[in-house]
Length: 328
Length: 267
Ligand SMILES: Nc1ncnc2c1ncn2[C@@H]1O[C@H](COP(=O)(O)OP(=O)(O)O)[C@@H](O)[C@H]1O
Ligand SMILES: Nc1ncnc2c1ncn2[C@@H]1O[C@H](COP(=O)(O)OP(=O)(O)O)[C@@H](O)[C@H]1O
Ligand code: SF4
Ligand SMILES: [Mg+2]
Ligand SMILES: [Mg+2]
Image 1 (cartoon, chains in turn cyan, red):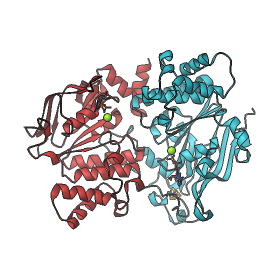
Image 2: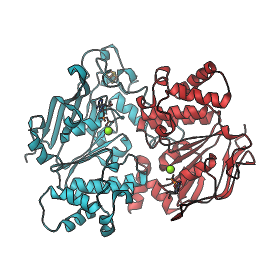
Image 3: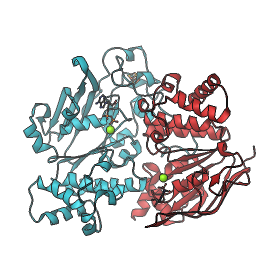
Image 4: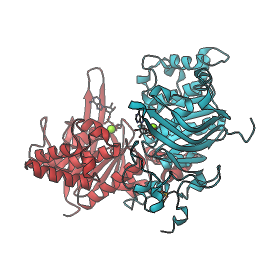
């Protein structure tokens, strides 16, 4: 692997879904980010901003939903994923790219014991040793204790946090280079969330797995990720190394950052983001954040959505008036 | 209204669920007092008994032992609750507003219906009042006419708060109201709750997230396995937690708040 080839590289990815009369509804239009080997990248944005669709583009399951990548480039180790056939996908999906879907808590097959679930995941990949031992190793990997008991249990007998660990174990069966975890802790207690975050960190550290962590919570990705990608209405509006993102440049990220209760004074001001994100199919020309933006000017309302400024790999923001920000 | 006006007293309340095969003591001898206009927090992990206690306080669940009084009157007489006519004053919102909103009714109708139940006004006046309440919750007329599934999670939650407010309550019990919505919707809702507190409403906020509790409340009860293991001034509990369990809750708060506590726990 040469150092200048990214593990994953998305540029201007657009995702659409076929509607009646061959009309295409555009769900995502300017998804831009890259992932280096072994890097942990957080993608944040309000619900509906297109985070899950982008995941599906990376593991090639958009078609199952009648959607597809309709523009831009998705490169995995330099390979253009838009050009590969299903046979090739089968060698990537669930193998080189592991995926813990958003509703994974409901995900494990309810009629299979944990042992059978793991065996199924392991049967897809080569390995040495008995299936049972390999399954146990996987459970060890995700820090599940009382392994022998858990192997015989059914998903409903496990807590939400344990179920999520099992799902992560399944995704790790093939030792993927990239693990995508789509809102892995939504619906779980913060105590469990904090343990799952610790687990993801250890997986990254011990196995060198690159991880994409999807969340709506900036405070969460802020602590565990190397890089943060902010999405709004189907576009990457800001991206940068975590340390640099502490001083956000895009008005949307600035607003998101001011609505963090972890940095707010008790009972103090919480700046909230005005209004709601524009619905898909109702995107206006120009910047799709304009309706909610305190900095907007006439030129924000025309033409294409603003492109990310600056150099790839550095702190980039997709706003026409970055120079004004911080001065108001 | 003086801050010291006692509205609700929960005294040694226990709740036991007996399903024949198993007996669960969900709440064990819990006591707390709600003063007018006061923000109180109940925090603990899933299964600690928070919702069960909240349901008792709303008059929805009969306690197995102990007493609960509202404005000095016993809330439960046998299996009946709020017989002295104070039921309206205590309203509850739930984690999943999907479950509590009729999927067929748009926000306006849902709230107007509640207004009519509580205030016996005519249809037009009820709609007028409903629009006012929804507006206060940041739901404009356009969104008020949408059905629950067309709204975002945060909007749905605010519709259910508007519905609860239609009864003109003095106590709002909010059971994990921010758990199912995203960060910005959470901030919006907490901001609205602050406004309600300023208007004199008492809020009992139930959450597994001590960060949310710290932001809104002045007093907190930390619940574990049905028992209040620690309680007190929120800021004090937060800055100087006594129980290991509280320290763990503190260390779990995402972001800056929990960071120092996490570092301490690891050492
Ligand atoms: N089958 C579909 N038909 C129409 N719109 C869809 C479909 N699936 C998803 N969408 C829309 O695509 C947008 C992005 O969805 P998603 O990627 O799930 O967002 P996120 O994961 O950020 O919450 C949303 O506005 C959603 O409503
Ligand atoms: N209707 C019920 N029947 C039997 N057990 C119940 C019932 N409701 C709650 N429980 C049990 O009581 C305990 C406390 O539950 P709950 O009050 O929902 O906790 P929390 O809201 O803190 O998650 C749990 O062990 C739960 O399984
Ligand atoms: S381009 Fe204009 S509307 Fe968009 S974020 Fe920047 S200032 Fe606001
Ligand atoms: Mg999603
Ligand atoms: Mg509960």
